[in-house]
Image (cartoon, rainbow over all chains, first blue to last red; front, side, top):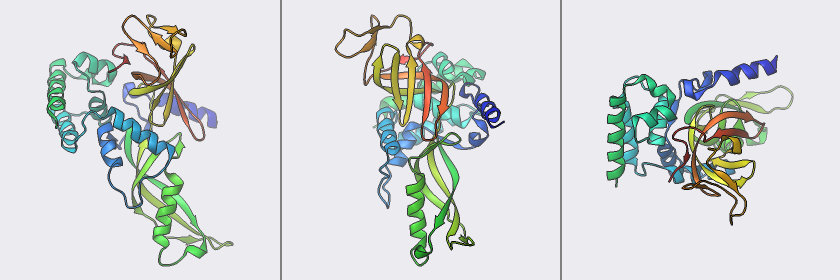
Length: 135
Length: 170
């Protein structure tokens, strides 16, 4: 019985169809740049010294696409302003993967297929400009 | 994917800690208990951002310990099947290669690597190589998760790079 429940849950979750399970459907998704910003905030008690924390910090430092706080915020605003009804998950994935073309975006984030190529491309071009000129 | 999530954790407090510094003690214990842990439901709990509520302590009958149901906000990392992620290769062998996405280990089987890329054991570092691309230790690779398996303390994932727009990134 327990095993069957577990299997059902595993089948339900599929990011390519935007099925994140009941636990995560309404939570705020963070892009890698946002995670880096949050982890690097000064803390009263100092950073937790766990393997999970240190590996995550290394990871987000390696793959941050928008290293300043302004550009991190700007890219989130840009994406959600440009496309209506975008899921949290999709917003974060666009900011993380920074695809160059609408075709690439739809291939790595399949749920974006419901949007028009031209609209997508406009946003992606703006995002590239933002990346190029961030200080 | 990284999430900000509100979670609960139950803390049992020994009577010797009851007193003026009790709340600090509870918060300290919460950080120590949950940070760095992993569960199938919530994924990895990376860091506690803030403690929202420590709740009221209920003294349990028999041993005098107080039970606090705390509510806190944390950054969690949970991988999903079908998600595309950037990763760093940690080791390569003839069966495939291992890559890391933060705390998560991903294995990409040689069958799920593009057929142009052949395993090369003669090179100084074991690698998968094609005419213009090399996957060896520390290469950055964009991969897609095809499945996850949850252990008590770890999540393990299987990935593929045999699709469009996946593979070595610079």
